[in-house]
Amino acid sequence: MSEPVSGAGPLWPDEDAAQPAEEAEFELRDVLVSAAQHNARLDKALAELVPEFSRSYLQQLLAHGSVRLNGQPAPKPAHKVRAGDRVVVEMRPTQQSQAFKPEFLPLDVVYEDEHLLVVNKPAGLVVHPAPGNWSGTLLNALLGRDAQALQVPRAGIVHRLDKDTSGLMVVARNRAAMDALVRMIAAREVSRQYLALAWGGWHGPPARSVQAPIGRDPRNRLRMAVVDLEQHAGKPARTDFELLASSDEVCLVRCTLHTGRTHQIRVHMASLRHPLVADALYGGEQVGPMQRQALHAFRLAFSHPVTGETMEFRAPLPPDMLQALDLWGLRYNGR
Image (cartoon, rainbow, N blue to C red; front, side, top):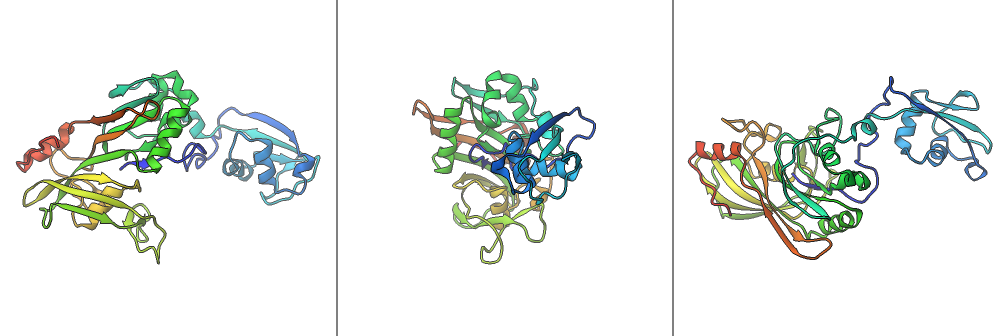
């Protein structure tokens, strides 16, 4: 699934979720509380005194005893500091800060100019470093491919695909292009279409639109689900589906996103009782060559964020999905 990345704030929502690296080298930061920070919470004052780290990470340093106040272990984050207090911080790198490094990994680049890239992401490639995947990601590959990516937040990534979803992604190469693409995605001016192979023969009209809010599954926090907004947190979501081919056992559908919620296509298809082939999280069994969810971002269209030129890209079905179609004698005509 594709999910937009908003703004230019923290690199990712879980940027500082990891614990400080206990054995890593560190520097001591020795600072004084200013008059303007008098009577402020310790964690708030610390965030202003050491602005290159987020408050959540600095709270972790506090919890790990890496902050001293006037020569003593720092008290609770809510402790009120006084002007002239001396704060010494052991600035330990996070796993994230060590992970965001260039790696020379192969990338299938289908388009490139001075402002943007369009890449065809293979299944299995994680988009950005996160717990369990601190290296070998698309972000690492972008940093290794182009030194210019170091100057762009998130290496220019403006939307995401799940690890096991293949297909097209647009990446900005400068800040102006990135800001424009983020605005375009938020305004739904970027067209994203997917091909999904799902269990169950398709019945009813060949075109169907699902408008159903998506939120965290209250029974399984690892999953997303269609939720009742009166009872559970969630956000509106819309996906259009069009049948391309069907057998008694499976169906191939084209999916058009109108919103970008986590696992949106997977959740909406499961809600129609058509879980994707090999999508174990949402009830889809594996079969033959399909060992990952059968979802491919095959078409991406938008106006160039700088030149205004109409851009459209298509990525052919990957071999595992083609082989899976062959199992049921289905054909994809390239639409």
